[in-house]
Length: 320
Image (tube, rainbow, N blue to C red):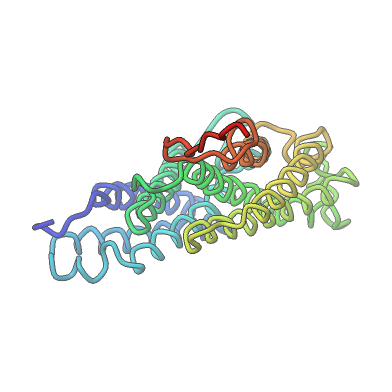
């Protein structure tokens, strides 16, 4: 383009504005705390970094020379991916429904700006990554296989939901489980709900961290294979989708049950279920492709048939 701008210019501007709002809200929360906790410090650091990076890249769009160095190059892709990961962790550790700083109760948001705009930053960063990948790797080209593109979006969504599950579980493990296992804090423990001190609560929380980590690793592996390899090993994708579906099935059972950390309505509850539903969708899609692949290769009747619409030449047999 003559101005050096890309279709992602408005996204970078929006991400910058959203991060500034989160920065102001998180600084206000930090100033209200006598001993600021690590979650608020992380929100301040992440929003500050995003505001600086977003402002710089937005300014780079104004210069055709500078934009040719960053815009549309791996530099932009890496920055967008890192910010997406950072905000995936941020919404997991900041948006917590058992903290009076964020919520008045489990269903009422107290600090609306910090809650909603941190989600806005995460969604915008995710859209940035997807948009960059489509333009950099030509995922919108006509030659792209339709099923491959569809599952690629699902695998990318699984990366995002697994990040939330991992971050939320890690935050709960860090803030609740040490308190539940420390006899010196028994008074504070009594003020928490009963499941905070359940014997199975902390093991289930650790399992939630493991489910999130496994989901991020496997989904990122498949996304990388689809982007980097010209031919994606179907057997690998099918086996990974099967394992991911089984693990997330156990995750739903153990995390969202009455004794699990995701039993209340919140990020962990919603995204545990979303990860499970995505994994089921991926498994069904892979199974459907596996069943239909032989028919596509040999024809519906199982006989070798030409795909160009021409008929096989047949020589008439003379009667002897």
